[in-house]
Image (cartoon, rainbow, N blue to C red; front, side, top):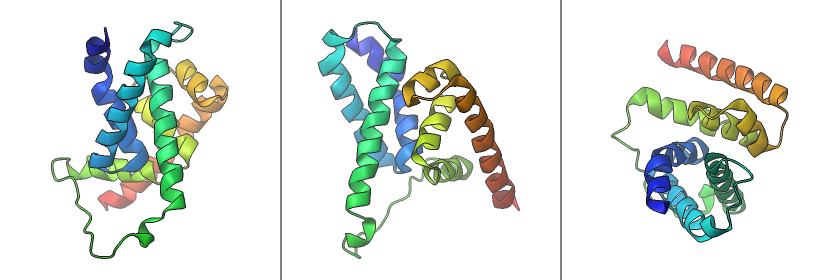
Length: 155
């Protein structure tokens, strides 16, 4: 059962993590950490929510903890000679999309990342703890922000 869950959700969880951290290697690590937790907690899963909703909630929590760790230890505390490698296999518009998403507020990052994974708005509302209406309004506003940034990017 775990192998099937892993195959069905790996890419989606990886993309969700990319939306949070905008770093390919870190996103892989966070996705992997998500599936370690899923593997360990799968026997405790009570089917009170859909399995996908449960997995996305785990991934979101792991990503939020990572963001908190990064806030405690900002990048400017790292040695200056460490070079930042860009993912060269992702086309420029996708990189720009991830950059736009990573600049959003934490809750908005969760919402739009889940929306991009075609998660139902009702499930998104359950994951982030907001009303369906609030989620729908936020999705609209987030898309408008990103559209505006893309218009500027393409000029």
